Length: 318
Image (cartoon, rainbow, N blue to C red; front, side, top):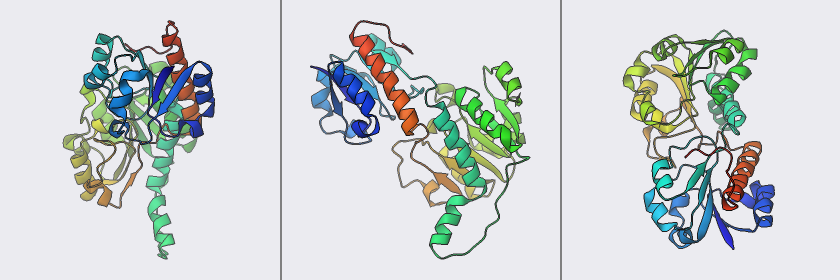
């Protein structure tokens, strides 16, 4: 029987429709029981048997795995980011790679807006204080009238801009290849990176994790941000120098930050960032909603079925 490896634990509970589709199409599903699927003890045993993989998370797909997965024909990646897959080596071994485009854009955008509001109103801190019998009515900030800078202006950032339009904010965006028509429609001012950083009260990162953006947010970039600004990253951990972010938070250069992604994932809990009270941390769950997972996984299952049946899949990237 054709076997598919799924790196998303509990697929049967989260997406029963996807499991039913694959089984009815003649596939056996092998699920990783752990989030960090690269540590799955039976990985070396199953790799030679699989013909396809639904790849969630950020575990690395590289030549060392491709050599073992001799029957692997397709890696169907959930979400849009592909920085954890060696596309050139996949092509060398005849492995197709697909993603799900912007299927989870709304989920990530909603998290970004939620983190902005939670951060400026200090909701997690107030929640913890109140439950600890500390009645401290800390004053937060409103976002009405604030200037919000979006680093990157793809589908997720555009969705964020649309959602923030009702809050009375001024929106800036930096992107190497901006869509000026959509920016105009959403009342977003496109500007260069330094302008956005210098003029924004809140900066939200939506850039891809590629070589050109690696540690883009460095000590020098944080230094030109407004004193007391807020910083949110729901894109990729590689974009931010975490030591520089820590120093900016510790010194009060930044009033606060919220991050959903990390330089290393799963995160190493000895990071000094976790010791700070002015940062909100979530475990890379931007696209982890029932709606996004269902959409993503249906697209990935469809791509696997197409490739194994000799058809061209949607969203082929290599």
